[in-house]
Length: 383
Image (tube, rainbow, N blue to C red; front, side):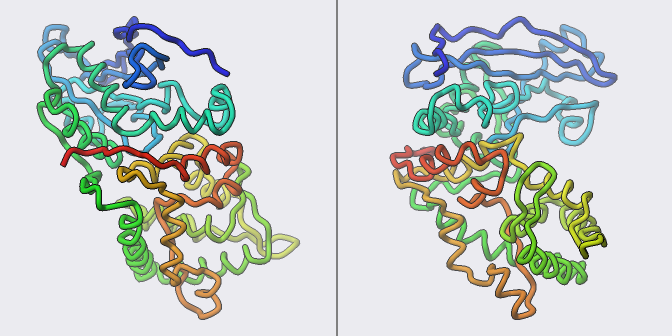
């Protein structure tokens, strides 16, 4: 069992600054309570990186307003910038940007199959991770804000799950906010909108996205059917040790949620098979690319906590995506192949079978099951 560290939350640790050709990057570390309802209890350490444009003088830097960036996920570390590009390029015109690794991600006391056993068994791990939702992340942000800039508010940019955090921020600490920018992450705030309702909306959208992809690349429909037939007769493992089952293959639809994802999926599928002495098998290049899409090694909290980010009605999430999928029989890949129909792909969903197929999740099966069965999740938004 890891020894708990208890102390008064500390200010930012000694800052380290490095230069890139277009950026000035400064590292910060903050100690915050694991449980904000018990501020005198165990502390965890968070990491954040400040980014300003190269050539910004000290006086100019001090005058710039702050923009806090909250990454999507849950369970994903903040961007690691290399030069000015994308949204960061625009933000640096008028802000000093803070890229926060949310608790449990990146360099902020990471939680994964290697570190979680330090907490004890599955019950202790699940209790620990119950403190890793948006409400705790926002309390972390408020401690960091006060340590960096005192009572002055800052602007928050939330991407995907970061947008969920931003709406929670508006609910519990609006005094800390000058403005909120949300990119693709606006949650349903009504406590009557449960996680089942989310997936009942999502599956028809996944179907539309899949069929739109096949309309653009008709040959991919047959390739996917061929892959389903192949996986029914062959055991296949990806390069990271994950077993590629038919439901796992369907999760390549994850790519269809991005702007260029349909094209990336097509290029991936066009190199799926290679001839061998034992007949057609999955190409190593295909297996490696699929592993990169499906892997949860760098973000296991995505699978452990994804459904909990919708939970605020006291009920267990109970593997909602898996339960609701049964209401949409069109996603039965075997039946689709037998009837010569397109195989529908899925997206950002988590399922209990992943605890067996995904190498990075197998050691965390017990923890994931306890989190799925957990009741008493409190409200996240003040309507």
